[in-house]
Image (cartoon, rainbow, N blue to C red; front, side, top):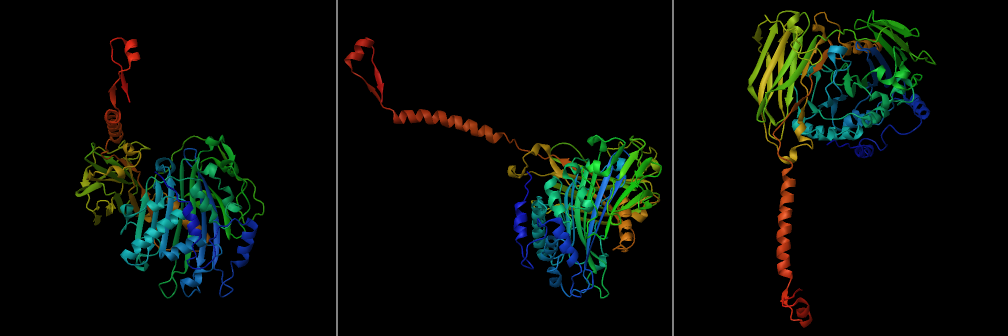
Length: 614
């Protein structure tokens, strides 16, 4: 059962943790908000340094099967230079969402990542995903300062606060679905040597994404959906889709000269949607406004950059009109850039296709798929397949988490890798291309020993089991991981309403560095990050290559379920017995039987005897 806590947003609005004013996102008009923010965006203690900046970007990418990817990205960067302490920053919010800033400071959050995803990203048809978090459901990841006990309490408060802000059931994240990964997210954001605190991750695979999550997300934008790229955020079209991923991220940017304090905070909101123009009655020629059902508006007044980028494959036969402000390349693709800031009135961006038929899309360098094995209600297993399609070896980390009622036997872990050219690599376990269709029959599966293994066993009705592996995958290889588990028994009150459907198990995550792709196409996520950072004249935070994460599919685990009809049967049977028994005993105890000697009655009935019941 999904419970949303929109009412908790009202409680969150009453927080005055650091100052006595209300949260941002009021119902003021767009002109009042933009004018006040424009006049106050340079209002700092020094009076000359601009503290906050805002950029908005939209990428439109036709996919190989005729669908279209829309990727919205809004970034607010807040400079921390010149602030002596956190309390000095807490009272000054102009473009930066105040509710996020107060929550981060209240719960000692250094980094925060939140994603809501609906639908599976079809890599065999669409190639690389535009975001790094595409697991179905809701994922929360945060690095919290403090000791273990204090961090656990802050984590609980953080998930409850985010639940109220985004009208989601994130409050159901507790110790049973929270882990502390050590290897998988070590290369995220700043370098590991400068990181402090404890990283925690929670996952809700059954979280449904709806417009009630999008509405508070839009309200955090400086111009909301009044102008700029945000004017194309039409919930009715964005949720009539094949894939939807919406999220936020808060992370430090750079370091000051004296070490510890970051130079700035970057708050990014992203929304990726895959739409099918044929669903809306559009043919081979349509505009962006026709696709989303909203009109493209001029740039947001407070935005330093407002662009629309149309990305097409070379030779795909897609014509883009009018002429773009600039032409460039993105991950080997043609990129047409339209600058909304330089044009006071933006016309329609039109795309025309020579053919709407399906075309081949380059597969990502790495892919991961996972499914459950075994049958019966007592035991089972997991089999995960990692495919390296690149031309050189890749170092990856594999993270797998199972709830406590699937009791994992770590000694049953078996890892084998199969090499032998493209045939082994293309024997992908995905449902899109067909499993094991092109496997090389002559290839021999060799045993692979992980360079590092971290295993945390589960605790009944407590923490889940966590397995992290550091593996080196050979070129053109197919690696298979297998292990077994026993299925636990749940109390009848612990089963969901649709218990016979099974339990959703969260995805496995494979992380690797993109510069080890072996000549494959650059990941779309890394290309977008590099393009936007270059436009902002900003260097990458962590340095080195771009870290890419591949998510496997969810799987259903069927557990032994009690006969939920038995309580009904027992109640009806018991009530019937009690009714019959009670009726007979009640009649015997409350009725008095007596013989009547009425002469009139005797004459009418002859020799019979009339009996009156009192």
